[in-house]
Length: 329
Image (cartoon, rainbow, N blue to C red):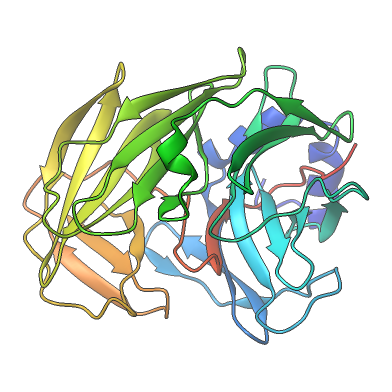
């Protein structure tokens, strides 16, 4: 397929179901790319699997009205990004490859995202309908809504959780879609605070809570969720002056530790970032939100291929699969 003209590829893929297009990465790995947004530009860097490096960047023109430092990437799936325009708080679905987008906000304030209070997750159901789950925390009350790309409509669904989670000291991660469930970490923002995982079953549309991995609570705790081969993994970072990272796998609502890395020397919290990917030469790469890379040498057996993560701190980047999935029907 790499030898076909782009017009031919586009014509073929627009006639293929969206979920099949999303799975094209298994046979066309060069479509993996990193999208980065800074104050002035938006750029895409293709991932070169053979050398575990990035190809030459290309500048992407944002197709919607925006201001400097305005676009936050909240979630992504099969080439679609759910983003927020910070100057209006509007949610959008956007495909950077085709430059198409869809505004999700409504006159009655649905599709309006408040940073540090809300959570968003993007998923696809069995009927290939792409949906956005929006959890809102307003005036001491939680509400949850689901947007359907096919119906172009928001609807309210029940959301039950503990009263103490309404505190603004609890911070939600973006949702990670894995095996028919959206997963969120919910962490209290101080040393020794409560940390849990909230699960949303996309079929029953029911929420439940499961425990966080048993990590030490003597320092800051952060869990980054990653879908690897349809299994949920968590990179749990803990510590204060030294940061320790453990990788855990979820098995039937219980966490199993897969590996640990040696403690990382002190890194300024303003520089600390999230795991970007694992590579086959045994090195673990950690990228800061300013784009600086740290390498951790591992003695354990690495994964078979390169895997992207679901979340970058700072909402200014995402690893995504370049497809022609449309934000609207």
